[in-house]
Length: 241
Picture 1 (cartoon, rainbow, N blue to C red):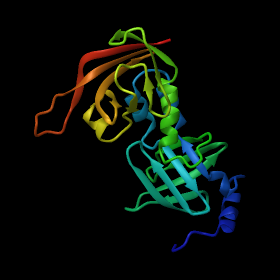
Picture 2 (cartoon, rainbow, N blue to C red):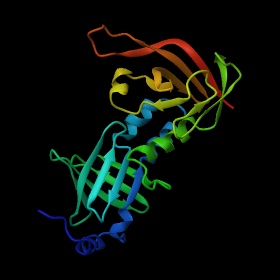
Picture 3 (tube, rainbow, N blue to C red):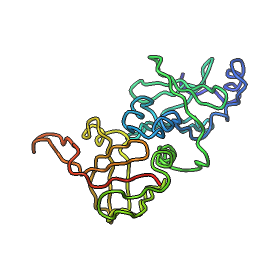
């Protein structure tokens, strides 16, 4: 089909299978299941692996566009309607089917793998992937932490949902590793980036409920190999206030 179906016809097609209007699909949708799993306070890597690989969708029915982010890469696709739902076609032949189940967006690929997404709150024109990241930061690291061990012991540490951190001696910005090169280099470990004035380094961390232990990252690979990061000396132990 050379052109996407007009919106009026798309509405008729969808009307036979659901009570949703085409514009109900519009907006930003985040992988709330992954966020909820991470918020239990254990391994971030495991939570994301169990509920991935896609963490956010943006759907624009009027412009026949849909995009997704996996925390490392983004893909833009062309949106069209078929008999039962919306289809998103990407370069290379990849496709996804989008449907609404109540207030949730369901995305499924040809293999049958399905993921569920919740509408992001006040996403507006936020860049693709940032709404999921913001919600994850708030759920996983939100609140106040006390430095129980390490430099600055006794200080209160606060991780914001925009990537700033206060209370740690030195760094004032952080980023959790969600996917991509940082994940592969860290193996099965959780890692984060800490920096100040655009200069920083990766760290390995372990979350166990209200306890967050941060280690220096040590590269165990040979000089001619891809870096492989492991936990080195303990840097801080943070405890939730």
